[in-house]
Length: 315
Ligand code: RRO
Image 1 (tube, rainbow, N blue to C red):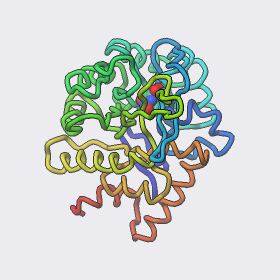
Image 2 (image 1 turned 120 degrees about the vertical axis):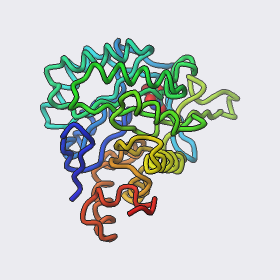
Image 3 (image 1 turned 90 degrees about the vertical axis):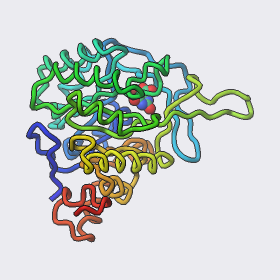
């Protein structure tokens, strides 16, 4: 039994999700598999207004993964609720929209507009992206400051009905991720998504110039998987020790196989997102689900949820 409930009474048939940003708003991936087969579909972070994003090139390959400096390109929340969300609703997807803002009031406006959408029935939660590495001023990465994180989370929480859990998406670029996690949960976050990309950079040594138009970018893919495992493990451990109230964790970072997913589950993740892997294999999320299901069976777990946090040795 792969079902999981991440809050709000929404039963997800399985714990696999897309990772925000890597699958746009679903139409492309739906050509490869039925997006309603996923536990949930996480959309690209949307802000109040349409945005063209950063200068090109916006993606660069490295031996450890991919760098991106998209810069929050997107249609804006009005177009999202008029077009993208109704389409996802029409195909039966359970949607976890990712929202972003340049200020806490912008986050609140985006959340309130979402709530008023005619397709809001498709929404099973909201992911609050406080950790985009590609904003103009690194000082504006809310997830690097506990007070700024708490303010955004509390304002978004106020805009949404109680049965819509709010997940704060955290950055790995912090000294103590448990401090940020604690601040978010105290401010009303019903869950945590860990991790966003890790700030990186690469240089073209023929041109002696940065590869990315935005100079720096977020590293995703295999290189950040151990960072994600560590972050999920540390925060779950802090929950076991009572330093943070226990809420569900969504694990994300470099998952390409069922074994990668199981590693995050064992660290404490109750759901798994697949991002960068879809660029080489668009069906990766459903393949990872099949592989994870098989691995859990081999290890004798009757229910997916029995394996969550198993590496903490408290079972
Ligand atoms: O759009 C982006 O550049 C971006 C975002 Br919002 C994010 O949260 N993480 C990332 O790697 N890129």
